[in-house]
Image (cartoon, rainbow, N blue to C red; front, side):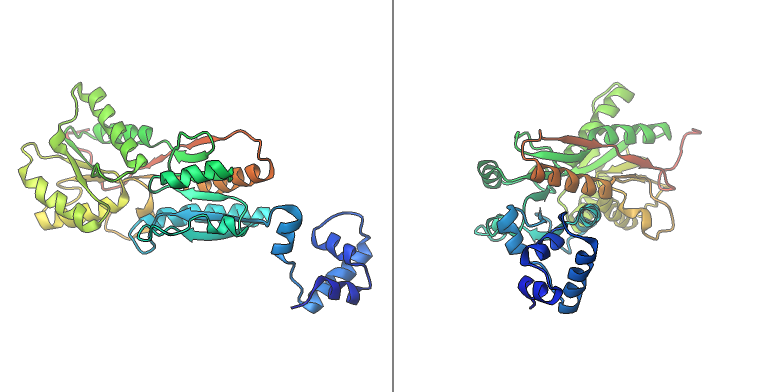
Length: 344
């Protein structure tokens, strides 16, 4: 591997001049810069990030942590959407990315190893699950720059990026109501599992039903399951026949649940939207092929990722900047899966 001294020798300049060219600093004549760049090309020289980190205190890399397990349903669609935005912003800002999936099965997993080894300057936490308390304390104690995506930690050390899930849950329910549906079911998450976004969507649904009907939600119309498609399908198949007042629409808190609902309705001999309308949340079904278009809510995941990277880089460059709390709107996307009924 070529060294900076070898580049200097080939270009006929000093070591300091090569350093100025590599770091894009001034006080270098254009002719000299071109000579150094040609020597770098000939030798295949790459600057040492370790050396750069020692000199500047930064190495131009940010870490991305996530509790999502790759290959597990649509959690990956969410993560990949956010990562796409992070990658776009980092590419423009000359930053590298180090992805570090957290291992929940291994309690000894060192989630801060990339930072301890000075491989990254700060972290983005994609909060599909709540940040562990131990992690939160260590981030705060070490003053590690960190931005959370998809959750709203109240701790003053963290900036966060999220979507307006409660408002979207409310407005989606209004859309379903305006289509003529008066018995609307909701499919959410079992209470022992934490997901602030899904909880906010359910809160919006409940508030809308109360405002529209003048009555609180019928609890028999709130179905729950864990994240697995099989459990969601089982929960619908088990609950639906026992419902005295059959829903004409089901609002699923994630698009992943829409897929399970379609399978459950097929098992029950029901069709969407002829028998039951479906509305999802996330926007992952937009590019999938079905015999109908799906009504859903599209989260601006790429924009969220870009903003998270931008905020983190700003915190790294200027540690004294105040924390930021940024909420993106969610766009309702109409589709054939939401049928108008009752002459509406």
